[in-house]
Amino acid sequence: MTGSETTPQSMTSAEDLRKRALELQLAEMERDEKIKAREATKHAEFIEDFFQKHIGETERAVIKRLVMKAAADGKYEAMVYSFPSNLCSDSGRGINNNLPGWQNSLQGKAKELYDLFEAVAKPQGYGLKAVIINFPGGIPGDVGFFLTWEPPVE
Image 1: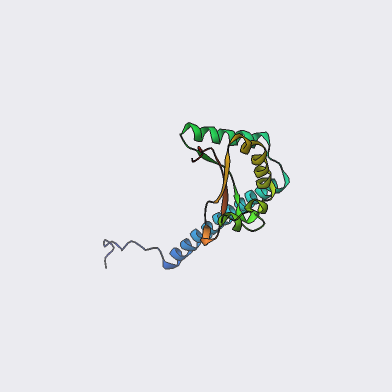
Image 2: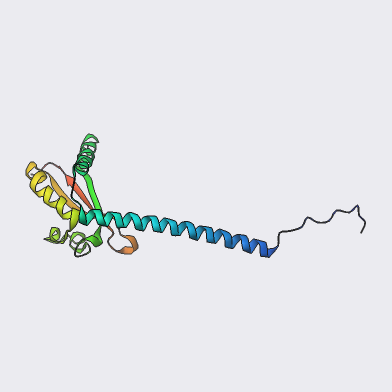
């Protein structure tokens, strides 16, 4: 070989590629852990709020806005609240199966909201539907409370 001949461009070693792949995997794991920690914090805050606090004017205003928006869109119902079904004393079984007395499984703000519905909205002709709105892994996930104002069926 003479000095004028070009040498093939050197390749990145397999070891360097493995290190890079590992670094990327570790970075992804760290990102996932941060997301899980953030979600756990949000969940803990929701649980504390659900069991320790009461329905306030801010939440009532949000519900009113949701109802007015749905009505303006020509709808007859609006989802006004949602919460994990495992916060029901029966993990949402009564709601999922539409069993009589499902409301007796409610706790915390869900019970307070149901009682508020009974005292204020029901006498004004509203209805309330409680529905399991998702099934992660095939099991009941979240409960949605839907305030309804459909005309009576005659």
